[in-house]
Image (cartoon, rainbow, N blue to C red):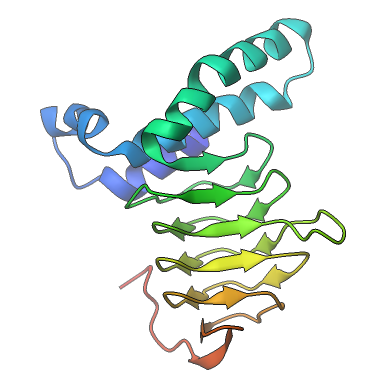
Length: 181
């Protein structure tokens, strides 16, 4: 659950005092991150009580909150700390996706599996997916990548670039460090 602390601090550290508590009532991305982190933690445990708790909470939390938040992050996906979901609506992350630190995903985005081999993308650190973008298939996305709105990425992408279009192509090298400005 330490990754949830990283998620929370990355997104809401600027709130102070009672405002930090109110975040839970206002931002649905907090719920989506918390439920994913909790179920992912339980999924990784192999003892029977954890497995039972996982299945119970999957039914009681994941399914209803998938409809409430509009976020479907499969508990088996591997996402490092710093996950950011600024706007919750129609977000899907496949069950075998592997995602690095400081991943930002906006509304109407998909990180999905290939139907050929059922493999999902491996995404590096500091990747930013703008609205209506998709990253699909057995591909690798490098570190410090910005995926522009309405883009469809179906081929591997190197580090430090901005990609856009359908199919997505490198627009330019990413000269701006949008995570550490």
